[in-house]
Image (tube, rainbow, N blue to C red; front, side, top):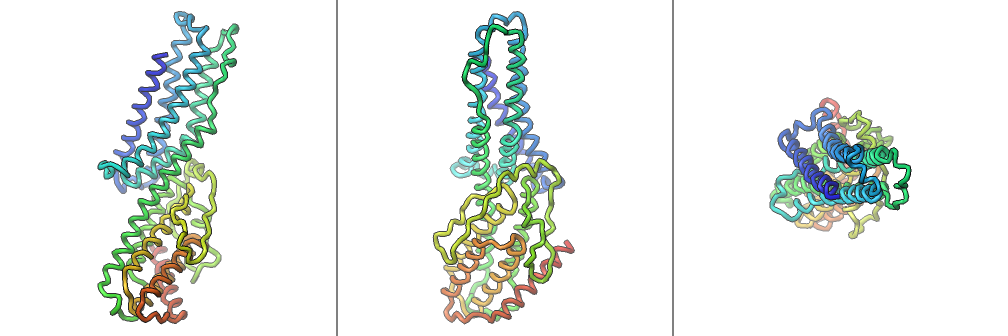
Length: 395
């Protein structure tokens, strides 16, 4: 019984090493990890190493049950097998808690700089691999081990011992951990977009003294470039959705969709386990929950990032005072973002509501809020949209 406990205790230590090595690999390769399927291969290999280590534990235990010298254990097999199952269940609970410990490290300790956002994306993928494949593989290996050990034991009914592992409960726990980790990843990435919006506002020293807008500001291109980059990163591990890969029927100006890096690996597609409808929002609802749960696909994650960033952007707008031309400039910027996001994701009521909230805010903060003519807003935003799409096609 002590030997069984020893094996499982040692297993916990080796798992920590696997996660540490994965993070070290992410840090050492930096952006080059996104080449090909390297990121998916790293996360899957980490998950497979964890699963293989658990399965090897049963191989290490097998000699205690297969030799004549240990036949005296026969009458205790039921108790021993119950012990193994309990230890295995407790190990998966440990694994769940250990993954969540990294969130506490980032939130509460000085070691947060040792874990980048990409680590949490990879860790989410590891959780989903274990949830979808690993738990069943391990339980199957354990059952095969016990069935082999039972051979020749006709006088002992092991099945009378009532404990058994419920794989669905373990899978639910690990998936909930993956959800929490993915939510943290989403919020971390939204901070980058928030910062861009804020710098874009602060870089204009006087919003009261601007010329009439003739184009969309460059900061919006930078924001969209970052989102496209994030899309390429996320789709290395998690699937995109139909809205990301199918042209929108209401697309403005006939521009093509984004060229996103799609992983052909079927293991990536398994992670899109349950589509969750994004909550709709009432226009101007100040209580809107922009921190709603994101699903395990690129579309949902990117929408979640944008929602948080737009809410922060509106708060930044409230700190500024705008002249009429400054008001018009933000109007043009917001319309361009609306057109682009609709093309990118389809109609998203929450994003539309947040953009409208931002529009209302600049109106409130303008000393002379005379709206820009709709025809001018439409022309400037759609011209910019078509121009950007052409550049994306060339890229």
